[in-house]
Length: 381
Image (cartoon, rainbow, N blue to C red; front, side, top):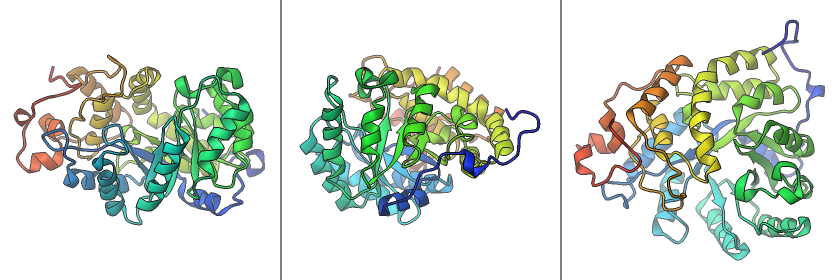
């Protein structure tokens, strides 16, 4: 919290801010603001056919949330699956000019990622997250070359991904963050930003911001860090995570907090950080352990979205997640999420819980839980 007598506005000269020196970075300065979410697909009762009506509902919901971008989560619609292109088509069509749609490349093979970049350009994505994986024993020069080959293959704005686990390199930098490699990569003109994953420590986040913040727009997922970071760096966005967990369309706490950070409004930052804390802490307590296991708490994420007016609907089982990593969404978990919403002044939906299980669009079509053959990662009790 702000110390007594602290100036309400943080002096601009005291903060590191990125320089917009390419067309991609000019785009980033205009469009990387506030919260951006991770867009989850919805399937019909067979668990395989995309539910276009529900997906369009969620695009409209993301726009109502004031999100400045969205990234389709492709665990269930991998490149090569016809649903990959169809999923993106629906989202991009409904988003129009109101919501930039991001892509992701995450292969271990350079040529696979370069081919996917061509497809992402073709279908009309606005930005790509570089989430590729690399040999763990890569040297600094090898890692730079593997990243640069992908980045130079597209004119799209590129967002780097500072993360832990299999995307960390302990031999190349503190806490696995290859700072020297990122420092070189940051000079490429279409690299615009860095997404800093939630498990990355505050110390590592500060190091990343200090090294890269003069050129790239920094986006920490961990909003707990904002009151400190915003006093030293221009922080204006956070994205590609379950941002529905901390705000509603009517109470856009996350967007307001990030706007205050971008403006350097110290007193407003601290007040909003205090208000958002119950919802944020509850979400991170659920999310962080699962992220460290290499997965996401999918049904919990979906429930947060539904609480604020999203479609909901259970996601199919994630074949890419480690065994036992994804927790079951039970009654106690649902009650905890509702309580966290209320504690932050957010108003959760009063719709029946069964509507969440099937999703709002299917519910309106008359579908009920008894029509589903499987309730993955979900318990009524």
